[in-house]
Image (cartoon, rainbow, N blue to C red; front, side, top):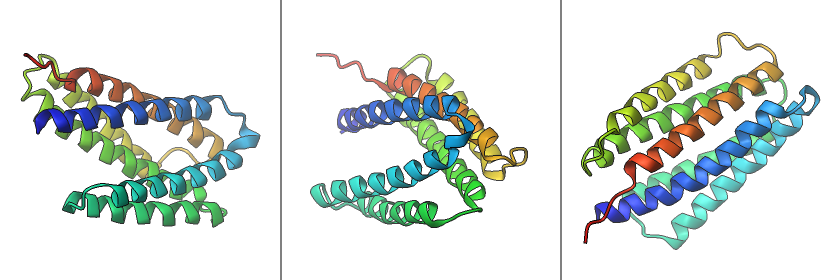
Length: 182
């Protein structure tokens, strides 16, 4: 059971890390005139992510955790639609969205560091715990959005934090990967 959960976590981590690296690099390198195009793409990607999560729910087991993820997928689709149709309030919406996502990712990484990496005897599991706390703190800062009042500076900050989150995903992958002994 532990190794099955770790294999699923490994697959999710690889996919999310690659997507976050590409998105973070794109956000850091995009010129200011394409910020709103990036926001529209983000809306479509969130809708697509919600649709994939719903497909995963339909094709998979129907456990309570899957039902919670199905509800989250429906909320993601609604959020993606809202991002596409909202105008001037998009900066605040994105700060709330990315702040919450980073806080959830920080909690997720911390939980897996505590439950899996520590239990499987990994020596450096506490590094992942510290990085998870920093990721959670970055989510709180972005959620509050105290300093960024222009869309372009906010896109750059989000891009940098997403790259850091991708790095933490790589550390999570390394530290949680089980060593199976025959």
